Length: 119
Image (cartoon, rainbow, N blue to C red; front, side):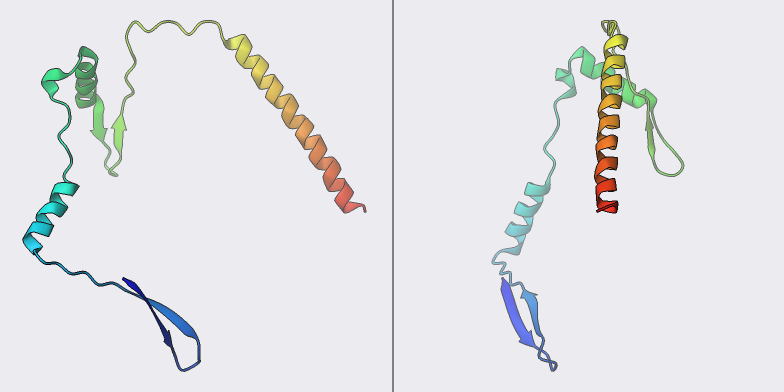
């Protein structure tokens, strides 16, 4: 492999790639290629946990293909999942903090823009 430089009539230097491959045993090389490209087998379904079995079953029952080719999958939810708790107040406080920070940034931006407009 390498590059070859050539000159055209206008004097511009152009670069072209040149590749060279030598295959001594095509059958062996092709077999090695396909061995490397094979997808290894997944886990044995006999060794699935109960949760993995339920996940597979959910996929089979809830996956459809739309007429435009897209897949539609319903998201599974774990049963007996613990409640999230009361995080609404914390979320509101964080949102207000972000709002305050953005307002501060906007004020700073406006000040800088005014400096550039009025030298």
